[in-house]
Length: 194
Image (cartoon, rainbow, N blue to C red; front, top):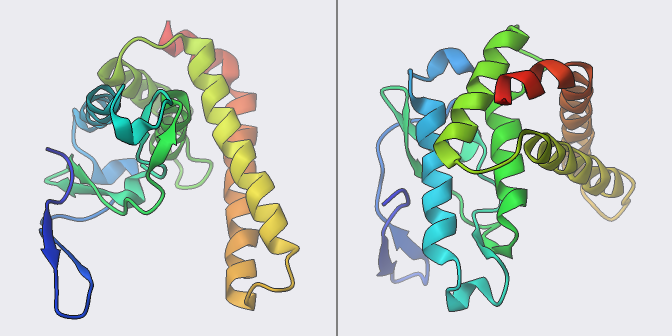
């Protein structure tokens, strides 16, 4: 229920999807109480629904692949749908959860107190359910490192347009700073998850 509906193909051969009103968010101040719990539950439902499905291709489940708050529609501060399914693929649910937890909860920018970030992380984990604290932090760090490595390769690729290489530079800085914050406050985040 947390995705646009597929409505067919238009005369130009383009997919038509239902419109979901709302907006994306880039700061916790734009999210209502309960948003993190619901976000975790939304991702868990995707994973549970697709576990064992033929689309999972023998893997754990189908991943959204990029379930950040920038790919989530919020209505009145609560998440109502994931959008931009272009990274959707078979995979390990830990990778999706780690990325969701990082991009929704850990922010080196925006002046969000670390105690608030830890509380949001606990709420998101509780919404998703059933993951060990250390495993969740490891999954988050894995996602951050994957972005740094991928975008470092893109930055050094002279075949990419200058704008795409500039995006890579910004993505490296973002993931690196958030990873440093996670490492710095690992003990606090772990205690919040216990």
